[in-house]
Length: 99
Length: 181
Image (cartoon, rainbow over all chains, first blue to last red; front, side):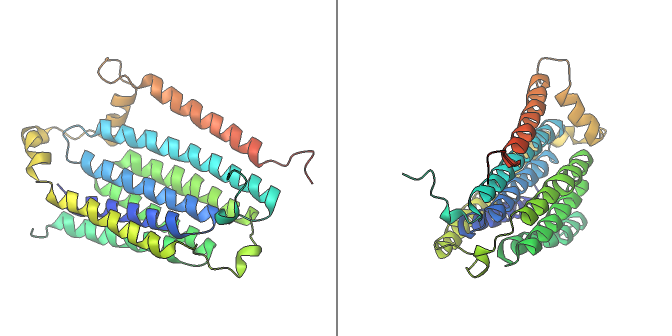
C-alpha cells in the first residue's frame, strides 16, 4: 500500500477542513470544500491502484466529480444571488435563516 | 520502508500538491487562492497519471481545472466584496479551527499508519499479473456493463440529470430578477 499517497490525501482533506472552519469568504469556503473532495478522490484512486480491477473505485470518483461539479454550481449560484441581495459574501454576516 | 523509484516520483508530485493546498487556505488574496487551487488540482491530476488512472486525470483537468476553477474565478469577479477589505480573512474561531483540523489529520494518519500492509495487498497478490486495461476501458466496463453485478447504468443517468438540474438551478438563482433593484 502506498502510505504516502493516503497521507497526502488526508493532508489535503485536512487543509480543506482547516479552510472551511477558519475562512470568512463564502467562495473561499467553497474552494476548500473542493480541496476536501480532491483529498477523498485521491484516496480512492490510490486505493484503486492496488486492486486487480481498478474500474469500480475509479467509477466512484467519476460520480464524485459529477456531484462536486453540481455542488459547486449550486453553491456559486447561491453566493452570487446573496451578493445581489446583500452586497457582501462574508459568511459570518449571513443570519437570514438563523433563529 | 526503503524509498523506491516510484515512491520518489510520488514525493516529487506530492510536494507541489501539498504546498498549493496549504497556500489555497492560507494566502490572503482570494484570486491568488484560486490560482493556487488550480495548481493543486493540476498536481493531483499528475498523481492520477502516475497511478494509471488516465481517464480520471483527464476528467480532473477538464472538469475541475477547466470548469469549476474558472467558474470560481468568475464568481470572484462577480462578487467583489468591498466591505471585507478591512476585515481579516479569518473568522473568530480560527484558532479553534486549526486545532480541529490538526486533530483530524492526526487521527486519520494514525489509522492509516496502523493499518497493516497485508490487509490491502495480500488478497490480490496472485491477480496483480493481469494485463493492464486502460483506465477508460476499466471505468466504462463498470459504468456501462450489461451484467447485473455492476448495476450502475441508472445511477450514471441520474448523475447526468443531477448535473443538468444543478446547472439550470444555478442559472436561475444567479440571474438578475426583473423585480430586483
